[in-house]
Amino acid sequence: MSERYLLIDAGNSRIKAALYQNNVPIESWVFPNSEMEEALSVIVQTGFTAILVSSTAADESWFQSRLGSHRLYFLHHQLMSDLKIAYSQPDSIGKDRLAAMAGARILCPGKNICVVDAGTCLTLDGLLSDGTHLGGIISPGLKMRFASMEYYTERLPLASENEVVGEFGDSTLRCLASGGVFGMIAEIEYHLNRLQEAHNQSFELILTGGDAIFLAQRIKPANFVIPDLVFQGMNAVLARLV
Image (tube, rainbow, N blue to C red; front, side):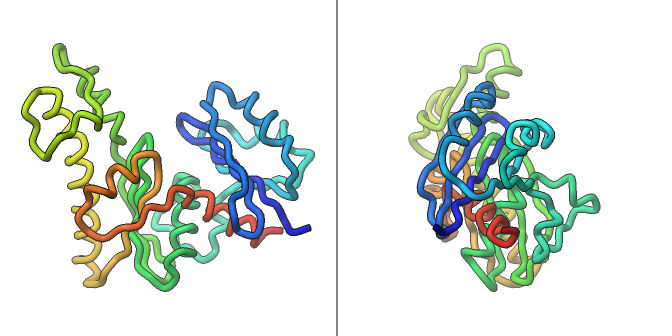
């Protein structure tokens, strides 16, 4: 039987998992972090040969105590031998960002890449074709932008992307919605342009994360949306280990 890889991505708000076989996802799960214990009990019931965990939500010891009887690995920058991480302390970079960059390089070999993850936070990373990481940005995600405007003011309502009808709103609610959405779009386009100007080369724009599809439809430069980019990267990393 071919190898079946169980990939677990425990992020800021949700624990996501996927089962890959022959580089193809065959099953996936999503649970809120409040249900991590229950999530693992469901996920481990499937058949697999090895596990790779990427976690910002819980210490590795937590997963080790529950999954240690299996062939278990943890995602670290040391496993990314083909990436030259820009951080002076590379162990501090988000593991989901590492996985997304690994996935992007598989999809666009030999290309310069701008990797965007539009999740709880917006992250953007620049990658040269030789695997040199140029650094990145982290800023509030779409829902965080809406929530902060409502929370830190007396009278502003809670907006959402659903209120967007155009670039400029015709009510307070729609102005808030447009500000959040088009502010994020402008941010992505600005950093993409800066990368291309600084290196005088084109960069492929790849988006992932919960808001990727919504944003990609409104971003002017050509782009690709890869919903399972993090898992594709994790799958490739685990395949090199086993």
